[in-house]
Amino acid sequence: MEDYPRSLMEFEARFSREESCRDYLYQMRWPDGFRCPRCSHEEAWPIRATLFQCVNCGYRTSVIAGTIFQDTKKPLRLWFRAIWHLTSQKYGANALGLQRVLGVGSYHIAWTWLHKLRRAMVRPGRDRLSGTVEVDETYIGGEKPGKRGRGAAGKVLVVVMVETTEGKIGRIRLRRVRDASAPSLEGAVKDGVEPGSIVHTDGWGGYGGLSEVGYGHEVVRKGADVGRNLLPSVNRVVALLKRWLLGTYQGAVRPSHLDGYLDEFTFRFNRRTSRSRGKLFYRLVQQATAIDPVFAKQIRGGTLDS
Image (tube, rainbow, N blue to C red; front, side):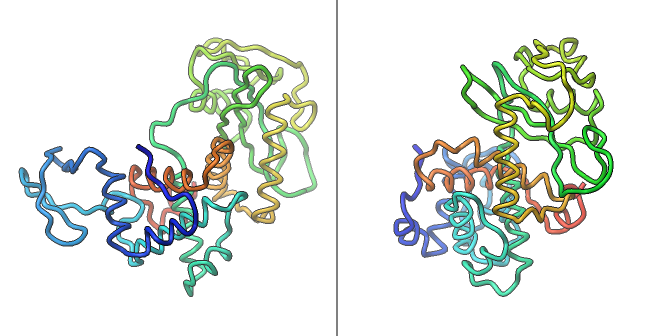
């Protein structure tokens, strides 16, 4: 059963103590009872408030080990408030706003936490899109002189994939790619769309091999210029994405960190019909316990920055 606070008052009353936050994480991580990360045994001795020792192999682990909360020096209460703030804001939250809400002295802490939480917005093993899917690309970046279209310089190319059912938009996937070549575009589609799906694209040659890799490929328009006469569902999503980046983050998104913002937009868009902000809080905490730790050095210049 999904267990989450329905309002800010309920959230404050429930998670005002560190013990309550630890218990909530325990239930998220081990909903069917403790399971040793090393040997999968189901019994453990509690050693300290957050530490458990497996009865079978003696391995010690904690509620936060192996999650994005690992090695944190800050209280879980503060993390929970950050997650509540992020998910309760309809259009997202920036680092300066989070710093003010949490009352932390360091802007860098708030900025780092937001990027860690964006990483948790991607559910491990999430399902790919299926059915009928529109696929096209867009460029993210400010106005710059020079070549336009699929060879535009100084901008980041993003593949946009949108499920459609009777003209209605379903789930989406966004994928940054190096270029508009066939290997890049086919790789994005393979990552985001289930084989056997019907994929609608324009006539760009980079999509020409989709039929050969297991998709029902339909060219719905011959024109291939990016930004002109886009497929309707993709066009709608692209417009919302760019408006969101401009409105929430004033367009100040570094290309090296764009993946995180794309993940956040996807998380929010795919849950746009949720009636409860508390359910988004629940999902993000749940996913934060299911992913590997994300370290600050990765965000600054490691795998997340590639």
